[in-house]
Length: 182
Image 1: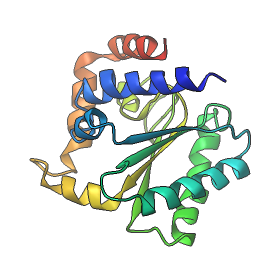
Image 2: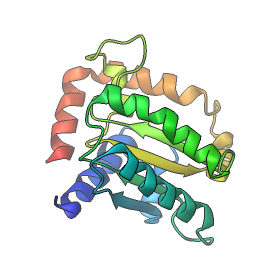
Image 3: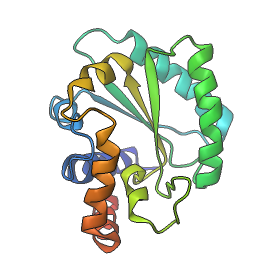
């Protein structure tokens, strides 16, 4: 596996889609400041991925001020099926709790085939959580708390994103994803 290509594709996705479409108004600062840690996992099964996740959770929880603000744990070789990935999110939440990181770190989920409940696979709103590879996004809760000052509140972001993607349309989103995957 070419780690550099996986990271470059992920960086393009963040830059061109997440930041370019302003899907996350807080991403630009950490991206521009190079405070995102990119970790490409060699895991080929869920147990190995959980072990790597535990390491990354501990690392992010103890990083000194000025270090990485967030971690992208990219796992291209495991949980490529979205339903398996979705089921894996329960053990992820249990691990966060077992390590004592509830209220300290939260994990956001992104997958190439992400599908929200109640949507069809081709619905454009699914692209708000679609990424070039399966990945777990580790965020410090204090960063999320600072983001509460977003105009309209954090709860407004998903609806704004869905409306934005509906205006763009599915074909435009597919083309953007082709471009970032290289």
